[in-house]
Image (cartoon, rainbow, N blue to C red):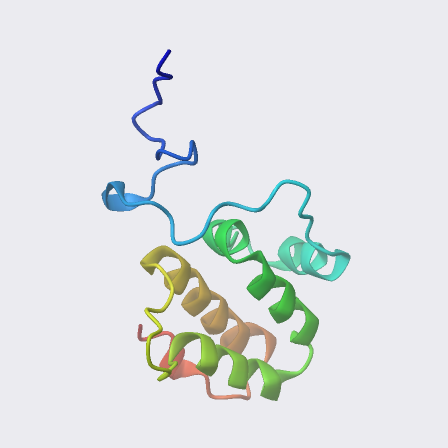
Length: 124
């Protein structure tokens, strides 16, 4: 018997992304848990910065960012690599993930380390 799926689900049963296209990556694999440093970081962020798409589709990126959060020069380099990659054959993040990474960079350079100039990340 064919199983019907809800209109907001993709063929995999995961929530469909905008435009009815499948997400770039599947949601967090069963059994994957974010480490303590990452959960602590998420708890310290403002409520408007929940990073739902980033933690759902690219949790390893969020874990990495949490591991270098206290090193502003590494964060500057990492945001540059994530948002301005010039590597061939890389399509970049889906728009909702890229927007969250930009918002996180903007928050980091305005609030956490305002002495660094990361303003170009906020422009999109």
